[in-house]
Image (tube, rainbow, N blue to C red):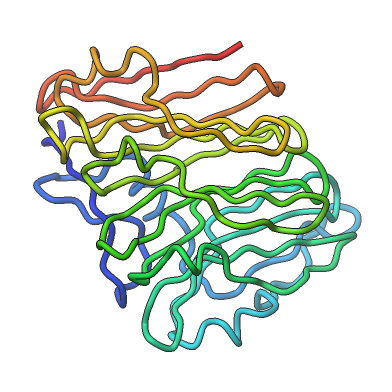
Length: 272
């Protein structure tokens, strides 16, 4: 049984795992997934014709971006055969962690590009999750470190093959300065839902609370606490680990909370 974990983001210049844990024998789910993710700098193509895997190749564009030598792909999703998106993180020449996305069109990968650069003033950002509702239409999320040194949750959308500007989604909730998007699901172009966590319970600014946020017709709203989790989360550590959408209005999310400081429980929630 685990002790009460508190998630915090690694400082710039470290190997880009998502979190360190203070006072915990094992990390919560977002860190567990991060630990399991590949640390390879190279990406890989989608399956070649007849279901055989092609040869791995370096993600186009990361050689120029990754001057700090610490890059990885965190998430990949395909809207159809040969039309995919991917995202992750790289280290720039100053040793700062930056987030990137890249798109594959008709079987050919484009060039990686930075996202959330203007938001990430303290140099620690990454795409943690990505989902494509159709070819050229994807949503992604992760975190960045702002000018105050706080970690903020962000989302970014690809529309008709063009990635837009990253948007912070939990500022009003995240008074404790520790938020991230850990899962996103897109049912169709411009209609996605995402989940993660923020720090900022009334009177307990460092405790983690579960959040969800929706994109409707191409516009992201503001994150809200998952209904019902405040009452469940008496131990002060709740996280959405997974989101899945069957249609634009019908999604489900799941994660965990701590009933007490040492008893971890699971939850599910649905919209529709």
